[in-house]
Image (cartoon, rainbow, N blue to C red; front, side, top):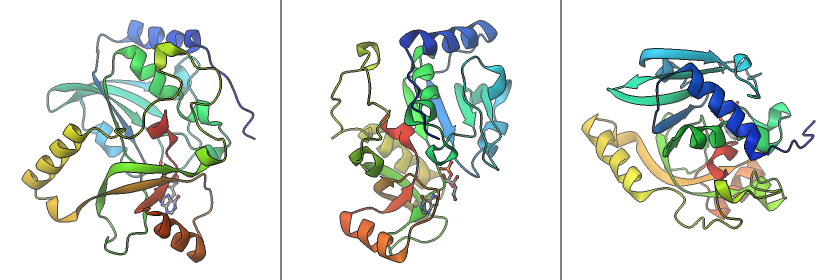
Length: 227
Ligand SMILES: O=P(O)(O)O[C@H]1O[C@H](CO)[C@@H](O)[C@H]1O
């Protein structure tokens, strides 16, 4: 379990080059679909679909409800790539493997990453089925040395100590709020602090209280946000 794999720039490049050779689509936006959100990928037009197991070096989904397909296509006329199913630390994958696709996306030319997940709310003002835009995060496994950026740093992917104070683009968050209002979703859109946990248990009552005290609004296990 969690035998940490190390990947070189060339590994990510091999995966990206394979994908680029299979499709003419060059999306600037990638969407990672969390539990229950894979249906979004089905809405794409002019789809090209790659099962994860067909992609060189790509991990495979082992979780129910995560289809395990990379779907290229157009959403509202804009090219994008959707991960229909994501990987989780609790499946036994190390952090580098869970976040492997994110570096591949950057080598495909993706500039905007939208990460979604089915999280548990601990903010008592929230209601079930609210949507929370992430404005900041607390990376609990990161405090224990489980950060996807640990290990050799290849500057082609970014600096050794990235600044995290503006990790969640304000312009994109404003756009999301404006769009939610236009679509009539404004009443159940929240904006809050996301807390990354390892799973696979849900939290005890004492742990939820502890995390609330720390300032967390919602909990789940999505290290792609930190990669
Ligand atoms: O983060 P996503 O992929 O939405 O999945 C989350 O939802 C499931 C738990 O309810 C777990 O798989 C958890 O990780």
